[in-house]
Image 1 (cartoon, one colour):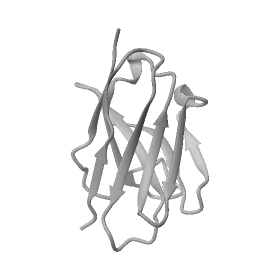
Image 2 (tube, rainbow, N blue to C red):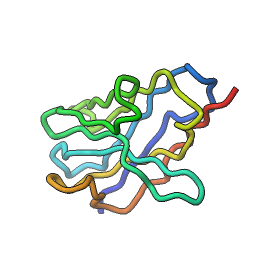
Image 3 (cartoon, rainbow, N blue to C red):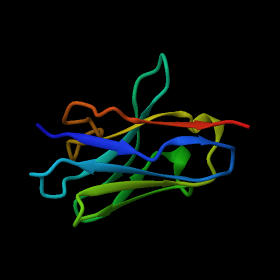
Image 4 (spheres, rainbow, N blue to C red):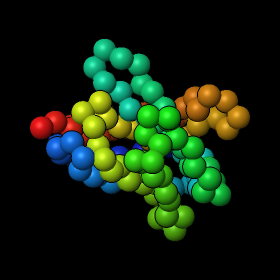
Length: 119
């Protein structure tokens, strides 16, 4: 079973930056991976995606502020977040997604990493 280990979250002030990491369990050949986020009482939403060859896609509200990248050798995906806003506050998760669809996740969720943006 594929496992994900997200890390890098924290509490920051508006305008500051964070970089999240997602380590993917071995056995996969650098799959397409997406970042999602969830706030209490709301559904998990897709935020960003990076394909096997490194092409990226972003939710409109994070374009220009978030950057997805990956380290093929370490089977790790990153999400660099800058210009953080209070509305970015959420638990962030990563997961494989079904290519060609609506970024529907493939596997069970990891524990996620909390990002809190407040002054």
